[in-house]
Length: 122
Image (cartoon, rainbow, N blue to C red; front, side, top):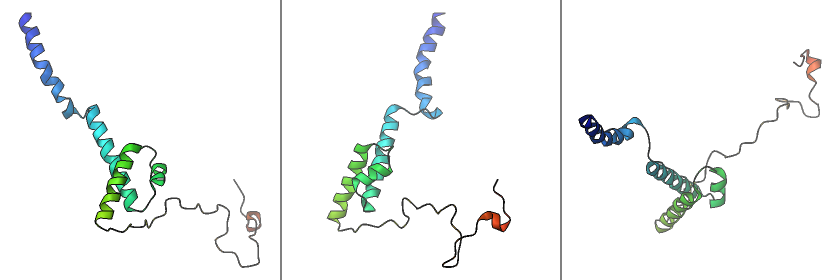
């Protein structure tokens, strides 16, 4: 009985060491990944010419301290190397097209109601 217990106690650290291979992340691994992600977000915001406040607003889930650190590092890097900002091509908030606007109505005429075209609302 003692042999089994001692064997079990000797092997338990080996089983626990395999948790990383099972996909179970430690708290330090998660924290370091979140830190790296926040720094990348901050650096990208600075490179795109966004203010730090805009960066916080657009990335609410990111750690603010990490975002600021990345933004500041990129700011210093851009100043030292005289790198210009790259303006984003895709707007962040696209205006939604009006739901009931006609595709093209002649000038001076109002859009005819749907009932006039034989369409019924469901």
